[in-house]
Length: 336
Image 1 (cartoon, rainbow, N blue to C red):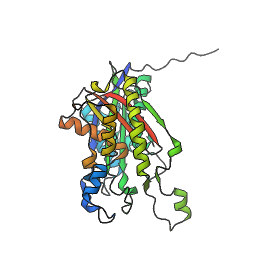
Image 2: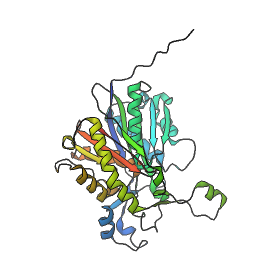
Image 3: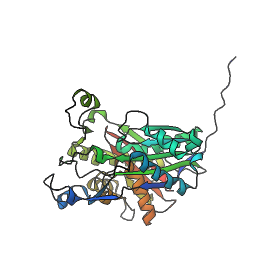
Image 4: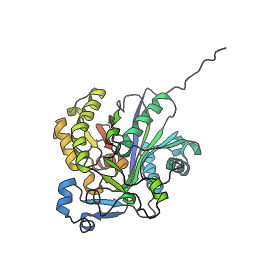
């Protein structure tokens, strides 16, 4: 006898219900970095748009920052952690191979009464958008009613302060959103992909095997072929933005905000130009004060735009992430 399978009912649509962020207390201005890389504040700002960044203290761990951001997102959504069915954490700086940091975070939050599904995503600066897409599918497919998506990084742990190409770029922090059911569309189709032929453009200097087999080896840090990444982002990511807009059935002029990954101010400006984005559409520029926080950059920028009134609740925004892999993802969302 063939048994029939009854699928769990999902929601008609999904949307972001709440957002929260955590920024470390220590502010690091360019002046603290320039001597070691024979540079200047003017040079750093001209190349990247970065004035300051935040670096985490020993107590501001990946888990602690995530829990703080998640608490704010849950409060914004008006939900309790016990209602969360899954926790997705995007990070490349949880420096333990296993278990996933998501499991600790879910446990400490009491997500799903201590029984929520939990896993990590390693998709670098596109990881938050990957998580949003996965969470939307879960809510609509019925595998979870509410999903917590966290982007968190302690990139200061992997930064070579003597590397002129990367020492000034990275910052630390965490951003989180709660995704749940909606009667109207709130998360558009994701446009995502990867180009593994350029995997060496942003990478770890040595792998863990090297560290194990050669104890004298310096601790791994991040290295980047800046010009290669810049050219790729400028030429290819504008196309992804256009595809995400097309998939959602809207045009650039319909946007109420543009929230790209905070990689480099010049990349953001180039995408604005390529998209022909109207001047009245506000654009996230969180990188100036927070640096490049990889998976955390989009939710942190989203929170700041909403808190400042630069973007409004219920507005339509395009989010877009890209980074090591090289990977990318973007979608149109309704702001919480």
